Image (cartoon, rainbow, N blue to C red; front, side):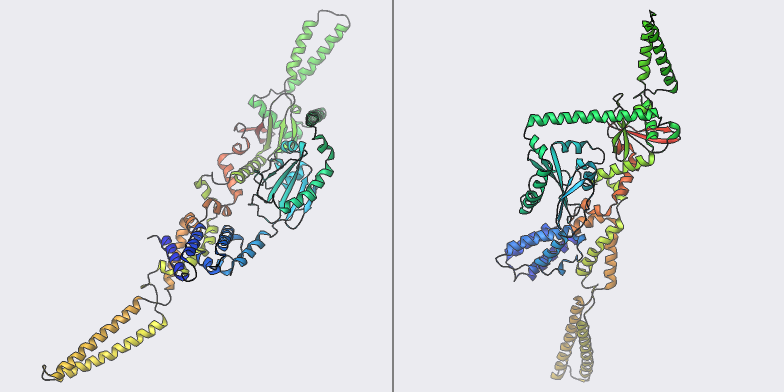
Amino acid sequence: MDLIKLLVEGRIGDFKQKFAKKFTPEQIADIVDVSQSLGGRNKYLAWIGNVLEPDNDFQINLDRAKNLLRIFNDQSKNFKVRDIFQYNSLDDLAKTITELENRVRRQVKSVEGADIVYEDNKYIVVAPLDYKSSCYYGAGSKWCVASHTTTSHWDTYNRDNKLFYFIDKTKPSSDVFYKVALLQNYNGNKSFWDATDKSFSSGWIIDTEEFKRIYNQHILPYFNEKYPEEIEISKDAERLKVKREQERVNAERNRRAVAMADAEGRREYDEWDPENVSGMDEGALANALLEMLDDEGVINILTPDDRERLEEAKAQLETLQERIENGEGDLESEIEVLEDEIGELEELFDVYDLVPLDWTHYGMPVFTSYKEDIGEWAVATYDEAYSASVQAAKDLLDDVGIDGINDNFLSSYIDEDGIVSDLKYYIESDVYDNPDVYLDETEDRQLSSKQEELISDLEEKIEILKDKLSSLNSDLSDVENDESDEYEEIEEMISNTEDEIYETENEIEDIKSSPEGDWDEEKLEAVLEDKMDELKDNPRYFVENWLGQDWNEYVKDFIDLDDVAEGLVDADGLSHNLNTYDGIDRETQFNGETYYGFKVND
């Protein structure tokens, strides 16, 4: 027997019977359709019937009820009062929802490197001026300009545009519009991006007077005053193109010059001497990476013997050149041999040919080389690499969700006790509100006090009738002529009395077969215990069939994604999340410690 189906059909039947005089058949059908569209087991059906009126605004209010109940159903965990029957009207529920939506969920503070352009009780609009502040205000979003792995996106977008971040203080972080990025181009064009980094051109508050006021009275004046030169240049496309290319070339030239100068300074003072570095010291990481790249065949290391020979060869070349200047001839072949040898030795790598970059890969330092194109490499000790891999896994989970994760793997990270606790309220309510679905009306229900009193009276009546019957039988035995009128009269009285006793006994049985008192509490408790056991065995069934919610969405609130991320790293290894470039695990030993390297870019 499908108890869920019986329950749903029973509720619809009860609703139609109860509200038949209040609503037309068409209105009842519309209410049932709305209730069923909300999923679950028509648990809002009676409430809709209570709060709606069959007036000219019926359809408008029914649509309003549907929208309000959808919000209530989806966000029930956020409501202090979760019993829908505690809300006496649509306005009552709407007021609570409005208060919930306008509740300040976050305080946004001002940080260095950004301007607060606008703020009210709901929104704060900030203009990040540097990469650090962009990461701060963009935290929790998927914006590439707030990525903690590289500044390149930030640099690119800020060449011809400026960013403004709208942060809604009231929306939960699950709402895609809790953070919105406005990309304002110097030429006047603008585009919008939600927190998931999806572009949109309608919706949110774009077409409202509220946005027009914030944009025209605060953002545009700030933008025009802050960047007049850039706005003017943007009007000349060719001039702008030349300017941007020159800026790029200059920036790259300056970056390389600074990096090479720093490298020569480290080499001069031997700052990365293997004997004086350890752990996550920059020099230790560089030395470990040098060993790793040599093992991989990416480079060839300049050994101490090679270095000694290089200095010796340079000295010999200098001597030969002095001899030529002094008039000695026929030394060209010797010089050519030395120059070739010096060239080959200078192609070898030492640790100072590695250059640390100004960005990290999930917190791990990244190195490259300007001596030869070796790509970009992140390197770290195990603890740091593990933390980085966990962070990468968390970012992946945040991006794609848990839908793609194997159910068997995920099941060990679900807080089943939390789910059971959350659903217990619904099961208890259902069992105690609908005992007739689970218990037998005759066997599991007690008689009411009125019924017991009536049975007692009937039983007393039976005793009186039995006494009467006994007396009549005695009288009958005293009659000598069984064909006399007296005999027939007494015999008829006996028959009538027996019939009355039979009818009274049947009346008692009828009462007992339709008890109207309390249900057997012990049996209700047993039913509840069985349902809770079923819940523990298959919580997904209850979520999908009782609550009418998507399991993957519901269960997110009962999974610690940090634990899942660690589990993924433990199962798949470090490189699975960190080394998406070629997926190769690389490790090496340096000064007694193990280091891990990950190629992150060409």
